Amino acid sequence: MVMPYSGPERRRSPRLAICLSASLRERGRSAFSVKLVDLSPRGCRVELYSDLPSGVWVWLKLPGLEPRYSRIAWSRGGFAGIEFEAPLHEAVFDVLVGIDREPSEAELEELRRISARCRALAEGLGEDEEEELTAAGLLALAGDCDSKAAAASTTG
Image (cartoon, rainbow, N blue to C red; front, side, top):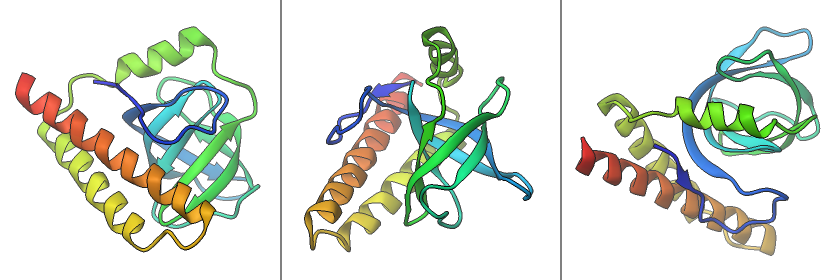
C-alpha cells in the first residue's frame, strides 16, 4: 500500500512512501541490508544502522533488479538519501511500487517504529534552515508511516 509523500519537496520527481527490503554495498565491502522508506524514479531514502559519508558511490540492490550504481546524497540519524546514477524507467518504478502490497502485522509494526524514530530524531533538530527542513521531512515521513499503518489496519 503506497501513499504519496507529503513532506517538503526539493526533489526533481515526487516520492512515494514505501516499505521494501534492499541491500547496499560499498566498493570493496560486503553488502548489508537496508529498508526502503521512500522511492522516486531518481532516488530513494533508506533506513540503515549507521551513517555513510555523503558523496560515496554504492551499489543498491532493489527487489527483482540488478544492483544500481548510486550516490549517497546525504546520511543522518540512520537514514540516507540515495540518488540513482540513471533514473528508474517508469515501468520499473511501477513494478517496485506494486511489490509494496498490503502490509503484514510485522510490517505495520515496522512502519510504527520508523514513525516513532523519525519523530524522536526531528525533536532534536531545528537550529538552522537545513535542520528545519530535515526535521520537517522526518515529521512528514512519520506522518506518512502513521497514515499507511492506519489505512492498512482499517482495511485488514
